[in-house]
Image (tube, rainbow, N blue to C red):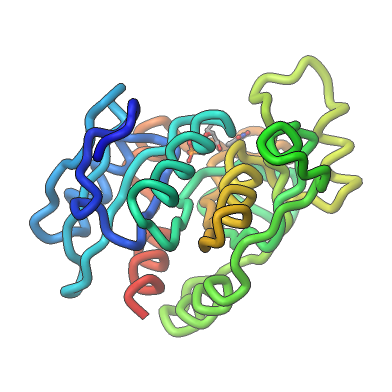
Length: 236
Ligand SMILES: O=P(O)(O)O[C@H]1O[C@H](CO)[C@@H](O)[C@H]1O
Ligand SMILES: O=c1cc[nH]c(=O)[nH]1
C-alpha cells in the first residue's frame, strides 16, 4: 500500500528510520554509510532509501522542513509502514553561548509555541518528550565512540525568519538552548501512535556567535559525528 506522499511498499522500509529534514542529506547518508541502498520514494522529491549498516536493515528518509511536513511523513511511516522508531538527524541554531558549530546535541525535551499537538489530538502540552530508552542508548554509544554529546531542551519553532527576538527570548525563558523546527511534532506523533522517536542535531549556526555558520553543502553532507552516532546506536 502506498500513501499520497510515499510510493513505497511497507516491506521496503525498515522498522528504524533516520530522518533528516533535507532529502539530499538522506541521499548523502544512504550513499556514504549504507550498503546496497535502494531508493523507495521520490514522490515530491522526498527521497527515502533502505540499505544495511553492519548487516542491519535501516532506512533513511527526508522529512522536509517544519512540523506540518514531518507530521505527515512520520505519521505515515508509523501508521502505514510499521515503522517503530524514527531518529531525527537534524541541524539547529544555538541560543546558548555553551554551544558551538558542529556540536552534537541530544534533545531531551522539545518546547514549542506551536499548535501542532493541540490541532492534531487536542493535546495542550507545550513540551513533548523523546523515548527515554533510545536517549539512554544514544548517550551510552556517544561515550563508547568518544563523541561529546550535549543533552538540551530544544525550541521547535514554526517560524525560521522572525521579525524580532520575542520568540527566541520566550524559548530561552522556557529553558531552550537551541532551535530547530520538527522534533515537537515528531515526538507527539510517536506518543499518540505508541511508537518511539528521538532527535540528534548538529549545531549549524549560532545566535550568539553570528560568524559561526555552516554552508548549505556542509548541512547536506558534513555531519559525520552525528550520523555515525545515530547508526551505531540503532544497531545496538
Ligand atoms: O537541517 P534540518 O534537519 O532540515 O533541520 C533544520 O533546518 C531547517 C531550517 O534551515 C529546519 O528543517 C530545521 O529544523
Ligand atoms: O531551525 C533552525 C535550524 C538551524 N538554524 C536555525 O537558526 N534554525
